[in-house]
Length: 107
Image 1 (spheres, rainbow, N blue to C red):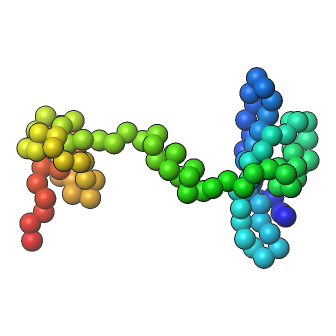
Image 2 (cartoon, one colour):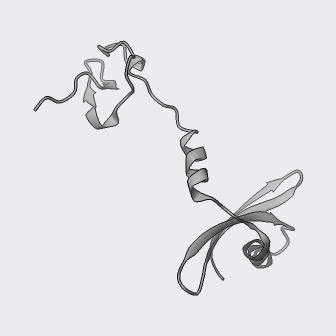
Image 3 (tube, helix red, strand yellow):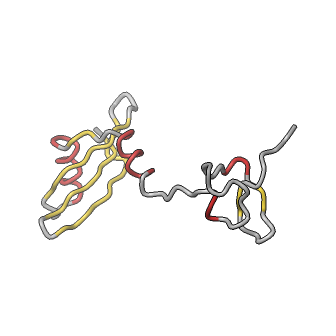
């Protein structure tokens, strides 16, 4: 398997990394694992051979949880009083120049 990219972390308990590998058929997979941290190429091959395949959907879900979910009530001009979720597709600029969903577009 060919190494496409890698990312490394050092902790008080050792090193671990993520390695993107590509098969001969062009399929890419992400693996994670521990390594000794002395030789990057050897560590990459160790992780591709013995590491855990990463569930991308699970990782995307965890990353999404790091983003704060805005509420309408964060803008003092919001007519909903914070009773509905912030909708970035229907933004308008309020008089105080804060982005808030004042009203939905009427067609």
